[in-house]
Amino acid sequence: METIRLDSIDDLPEAAERLLEIIHERGASVIALFGPMGAGKTTLVRELANQLGVKDTVTSPTFALINQYIDGEGHTVNHFDFYRINNVSEAFDMGYEEYFYGGDICFVEWPEKIEELLPEDTLRVIIEPDPDDEDARTINIV
Image 1 (cartoon, rainbow, N blue to C red):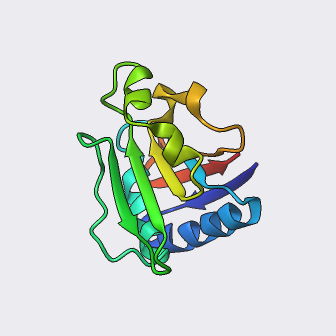
Image 2 (image 1 turned 90 degrees about the horizontal axis):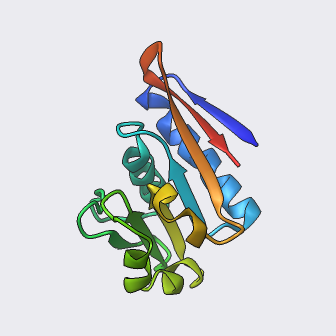
């Protein structure tokens, strides 16, 4: 496990850079982002996408379930938000296998809703807000 500490939003670019290094080192394509509402999951995905060269505006796919972007090398970046699903059959209906096993990067918010569907080699990123400092976060990478 690796831990990254953010004292403020200003630390986000460096944290995202390190996370991308870990993603590449481990050959991960599915990155599951765990954390409570407001922890900064979408904000982290936005910075990761920016560093990957995505030019589109990155927003949470809360209602669409998935947003797709193209990175600076022409690869697809998939961004999932499973907050609003009621059961895993909804993930089956959207054809999650094609995304999770297709080789493109998949950032997954609210993965606990579909955890049994995540590939074994999923990189787990746990974002924990600091209870004593609303701007600080701890990111644990498993």
